[in-house]
Image 1 (cartoon, helix red, strand yellow):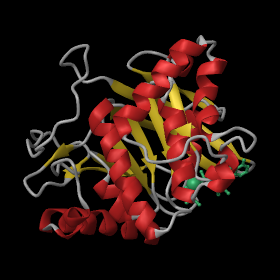
Image 2: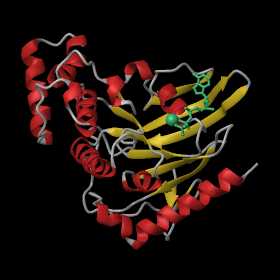
Image 3: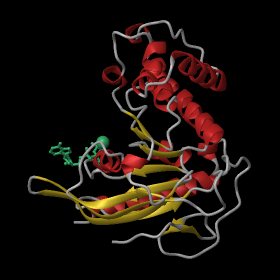
Length: 289
Ligand SMILES: Nc1ncnc2c1ncn2[C@@H]1O[C@H](COP(=O)(O)OP(=O)(O)OP(=O)(O)O)[C@@H](O)[C@H]1O
Ligand SMILES: [Mg+2]
């Protein structure tokens, strides 16, 4: 199935293929792309992936806008992680093509934040050295690295002892370090696979604020897999709803609520309507045989 980028109808809910104007609901716009007014796109065409006899994707096509925060939500095991693993280049596709505004994955600077922060950080390196690590791999001189890291930390007012080893930090602090490590390379596309699912609720709410702060500051194209519908709506310009396997696009829902989105937004009637709509689509897809 081919999906165009969703357009939004009067009820604030986007349906793929409808050609209605984009809403101007934002109070705070994320930074505009520096290049031109033309929307840059991630284009996924003819994607195929099977594990043994299990077909996950079969001719999956989608176009997603860049410089937006897109959350991915769908039934358990439908292939959310597989999708971002393939389009970030971590996992081979059986067939298909992924282009970032015409550039291949190899030509695009990506960063990935894993769900399991405990296994993602290098335990033998202090937090600060974990953040430096990708810049070292890139071969940047020490001075340039230090400037980059200092700037990043200044931008996000991080209150963590970065001289500490990861095991002495809380889960949220470790995941913050993982996110900083992902950002320090100034990626064009940031992938996050359920980055808060191992954190407690208070820390999750804090991390939702952090992600928004980063997004509003950098405007980095962000693809966030979430199993929490509230989070998927709160942290997205668009929610990509997937079906059961073989996985297709159920719908792309345009959230269109102003940024930043505080916890209070989750009780806003427009938010509740969008979430309800996503849930209806989700149930329809889960029940479909
Ligand atoms: N390396 C693999 N080898 C075999 N099967 C796999 C592999 N990776 C994923 N799968 C299977 O492919 C399907 C999709 O997996 P994936 O992890 O992408 O789903 P998901 O939507 O991220 O699931 P969850 O909601 O549990 O995170 C699942 O049935 C899973 O068991
Ligand atoms: Mg997953």
